[in-house]
Image (cartoon, rainbow over all chains, first blue to last red; front, side):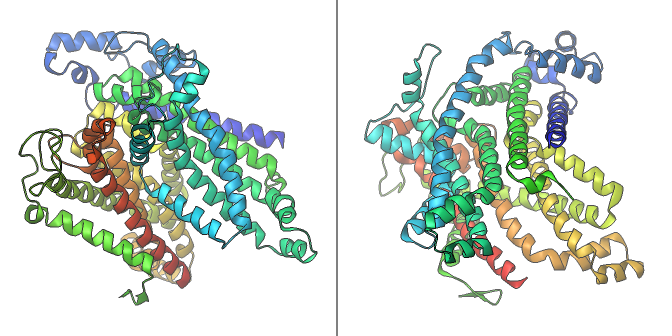
Length: 315
Length: 271
């Protein structure tokens, strides 16, 4: 059991390392000279050579990679190419904002979708089930920004309930943050609840069709007890997996949502940095996003191992 | 209505209708569009009128015309990328399954590596260095997308490659290309068609999202994602122009999903 968990964690660390290589390779070794790209019109031969030296581009790539990773592990991502400021201290409050939004959304979406999934599975074929399915199918098909603008148009502009722009500052109080980030949170919740609910429903229904459930029903147990006590424990592993995958998806969805609501998070920084070709910031954001993504996937696998005894003894 | 000798349910018919309308809108844009896509015709954000059914946009261009021309770029580009990624993904996936051993391991590990990060994050890292050139955009998304297709086609081909008729073809001395094209492909076609629909949808949304973030298709070309970006600011004042391109993206996505749902269920019923 413990060795399996350690094995999985080691695999996660290796994946993370591979991702860091990929990010570094993506920004450094690909064709196209970085110095040339940054200077653009001011690219005289001397300027380019000077900047290449400043960026350390005249050193071998492997050496630069080791240097970059060593510093990144200690939280030092260098200085921005555009405003010459320290990347880590610029990104720290933004990372906090992004995590706040993601956790805010997850805290509401996860219980809601699991409950809805179980209810729709229990009442399979009812009107409630049909309506929930139609609504979630719609939410899956709509792009995040479309949902976001719909909410802005109706909830914020038409009803005037919540602020249009979620421009939180470090001084904003916790309750103020909850209020300002309500619409971006709601958009994220709509997108991921749809996925999670459908998968929860599907896995509970899959378990519900097995003979031992029929046995329990024939025995005369009430339906809620069959669903909660007999079906749910066996449906737990796939549900945990789906929840973790969707939380990982939050990381991607959050980029678009932050731009829609002008929310000062990590995703927005990354979009800005990509447009301005501010490579150290892009690398830092990419690595942080990849770390969260890979960690969540790893946690999902470990939890699935713990919740399902059959996986602990692979044949 | 019947297609592929199967009766189409109502939902699939709606999907087909949406797809046909979108594609014909894109194909016949120069005939259908009342104005050229980049011409300034009046005051910015003019309300819809008889001359301009959907009003004018942020620079005073006709929204309906831009929507029609935008369909060309959004749909055309997604089709091109999906076709490219399918060519790469199916070929490498089938080869990995048929050749096995070393080649399979190298390709699979490379794909695992690319899949270890969210596609949007990885695309943004690459675009930050190579710039948002159209060719860069196409190749980047095609390669990222090919990883998913590699997985699907590899597992499909794995099952087919163990069957007797493939073994017979091998013993007959047929080459790799012949086996892939004549033995594997025809037997994997039905699920691959459904996968094509899904991947097209994904690519279409992906390009639209990148354009929306300002990292995709660059102005002055009209495409639905960047139209959403350009028109979004006016939502605060209650001007609903942003919902035309965003709604177009959403409608086409739903249409394709309805069609793919049906394709998946019929191909599943056959096996």
